[in-house]
Image (cartoon, rainbow, N blue to C red; front, side, top):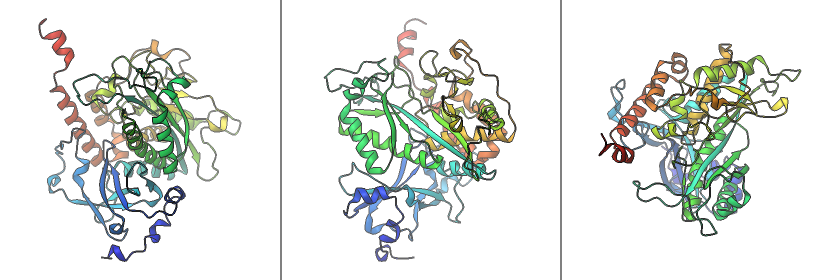
Length: 461
């Protein structure tokens, strides 16, 4: 094994993005954070002094990081006999993902790692590996998917007692934020110091923000990201979540990515804009030579309608996720489609023909970005391979139609476990592990007695 202290740091520093070199500006790195995303999208890994970091020395973590539920408990996996041996997996740095950690007191960078078994094969439970697998399936057919996520989140007053409701934050005027002020510039400026820090962190990390706006909820912000490679964009969302939380904490508030943090406010989504280009020509395969929607465009739509219900437990991964899907409150209740219609689950934005794309509006911001993007692209891919036919566009308010999405996590898990096409694409190890974790979380929630039950049942039934 090579002594890491003998390695010239320039050997790997030459591989990191220019943005990190710009941020360093001659300063010497002091610490590196080696991180991976678990199934919930939580950043896990190890931090070390820079002199201890070397690509030649393997870095290990127990595979059990992929068995944890959002509560920190571990799910039992019936089909993994050696589960509790907790064998080590190997973390391999992807230096193209290296970014600054601008809120750290030390000069620190973080590097996203890929996760492999000790024999060199990718671990199928790793969300980043799953997204890479789906992208590779596209490449087998000469296609390259392109995505652009939209991130919605709330700034809130610090909530140190989980039994108390979440409240909007206090802005620069000394007043709590007022809801239903979508796109208000004054509302954005109310939390200007937080927004400024988010911009500063993004610049230090080399990320390009397309737009920032006030959403409909009180203290609700939306950040749109520029379109690009699915893995690269998922990396950005993964890092942004942590950066935004840090910017909020620096300014005395919380940032939450819960799908429905406040009862009387709209939920938070992560809409995904999706298109596919031909790897040879670079042209959008959703568009024909005479600038009409292509057959593959309709096949992709059909696949979304066919398979997104089965993948709903990935797009809406928690019991709270299902509270977001309320008619007339900025969240879809079905998977109908139409052009420039924000009431549908699948919207075709107004664009030039060359930029024709499909917006998936059902994804919650509480998702793991790697898994949600993988799931959405998988549904479209399965549709293209099966020549799926979508339903006709509805051309009206989709809220007037029936609620056609799963209403609970348990219902969504039943659909997930019954879709053989999804299981074949994602692999049984991932699907069975994910199902076990989500089953554990759903059953844990059923043991909690809510304030609604105490208020309405305690003395009335």
